[in-house]
Length: 269
Image 1 (cartoon, rainbow, N blue to C red):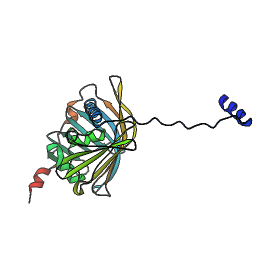
Image 2 (image 1 turned 30 degrees about the vertical axis):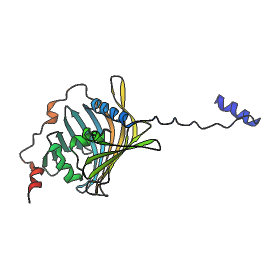
Image 3 (image 1 turned 45 degrees about the vertical axis):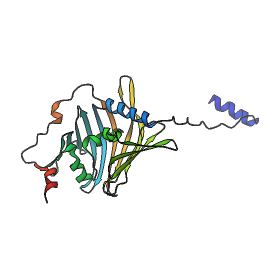
Image 4 (image 1 turned 30 degrees about the horizontal axis):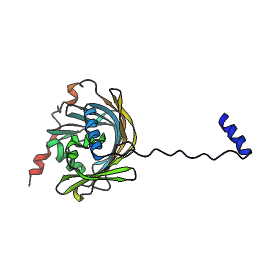
């Protein structure tokens, strides 16, 4: 109030100069090599985590919104979605060898080897494994992608664009913020595997050894079908300081659950 009064008095006598808007500092230059090193460190620091989020699905199987829990430890992961009453309606356990996904409403479970690639291809049209998708949620380019980053590294208005030659006929582009050095967007323009993942609402998370990571708390995934989308909103993501109860990764199902092997389904004529 004191400053305002003095300025008002100065205006009356014609001596108050107009305030100049403060300019944001220019984004720090970021090289492709620096970004990759940061990604490696990020993957290491977020290798054992537990988090909570809100999810919204709009897919062919129907629309659903609810709370979700995610836990990852030593290559294993569990992702579960609950209804507003707190009842778990869906869960997926993943590991490099494959996945098991259970749907409570149908009493059906699906299995798939190779990280569950055929499962994500069938239900979401995305040629990804569970580990690749989980890393992307946390703003990490999967290791195999990082190893195939091409020479393109273009600075476009404070953000950088790179190219991943994932397969012979598929190129994946990614954009990195020059300000916070985090992924802003990942997209594939391949007709049969088109997807777009955007990150926003960046803030700190996951304190470890006195330092914190930056997380895009809002993650939007546009699937190949333009009418389908998955949205995630992180409530929290924390580093696991000790091993979780092994029962979390249990694949035990009741006898009335129908189990469908998606890899066998694909081999049928």
